[in-house]
Image 1 (tube, helix red, strand yellow):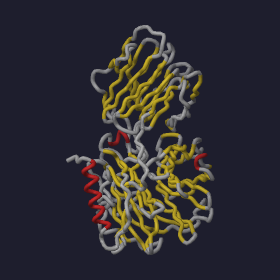
Image 2 (image 1 turned 30 degrees about the horizontal axis):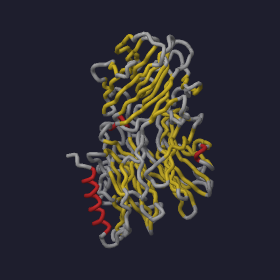
Image 3 (image 1 turned 180 degrees about the vertical axis):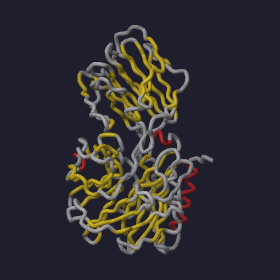
Image 4 (image 1 turned 90 degrees about the vertical axis):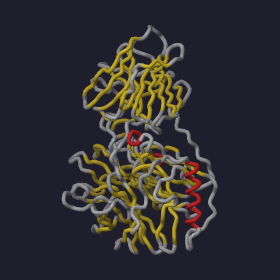
Length: 525
């Protein structure tokens, strides 16, 4: 049964009041302001969050999309602004799979410990990069750790003025259980100097399903605590969940909480996990993690959601404030109201070019300019899709409209891009429209339509329902929407295991050239 979110909030607030009324529980006056999840909308998996002074910074997985690892900033954990990527220029040693970045700050220096796939052997290992000003991007320091067949999900913690790296190991080693390992780092955080030690082993007979990953460590009182995730992270058959563990010392022994898992799927948010814990100035604990929203699910991707932890000092264990579910709406960390604006409207003749474009990391970086009131995206001849500039989809139902000046020698399209072998869109060339798809590396024409002669721009439009079903068409001179496909097209063939398709514009043709785009409007329902 789908409950009304206000009813749900009332119930959870009542439950939270009972929780904080327990002996030894945290007692504090809570602000009345609420927020809705997600707090960072769209595909933003494996988020890491830190607080430096009065500012929070978060970074997340970008997978096969460039620029690598988007960074956001906030002063209240609820309203986030994109500030740029970790890597605008991709490191030469990496071929893709930009996963699970972890932020760390020490002595005025920002670090990001990240997972990526090495070109030489296609294995995923852990690298490190640094920056004095993360808004200006990071300088890559190269490979930090390789470990058997794979080392992923780095997390760094300082203990008694010493730095320690933790990571997931043996995930690809047959016949060996997954382990969470740790080792000491050099004082500058750029080299592994200590011998590896075990924190946790996954148990295939429990909810973990043989996997343990996405660990985040923090200390409170005499214990070190860990949130970690288990089971299948991604895709339509995911069953990701979150567990807790604690230890009297970093090297253990670590005790798993008997009540695990502590965060699970429910009607609104599915497969929660892989995040980090941050404390507010008033000592509230929040877990920024990812989950799939039921509406849109894998088509929108794993989004950044915020769930509060509260403490029972009698047991010494934390609990999620709203039970084992990711709240649809919850009591905010501050009294700042949440701004829920994801739509984009740009007139390239009037609006500065602040669109956070993304692209396929396996292809050359798209070349584009904005001049004379138009976006000019350069074509790459002999490509199945052409040059593509994409946007992260924030919600599952939306309408994209793009004003285009048709050209005789170049197809200009709008559509969905999964990868270089799977895409879907509608394009215009001269006085012709083409509905097309690229599926498993084969490009096909689904439908064509002639247009009346015209000298001005044409607006192409696509509408998404639940992120899966698409209607394509154009706007007539009279302002009416003319549908090209009478039956919605199912985009479920687009790849979306550890990522979601991007929405955007493309140009394609046999010769060099560039798009002529006047405007772009992306409106979410």
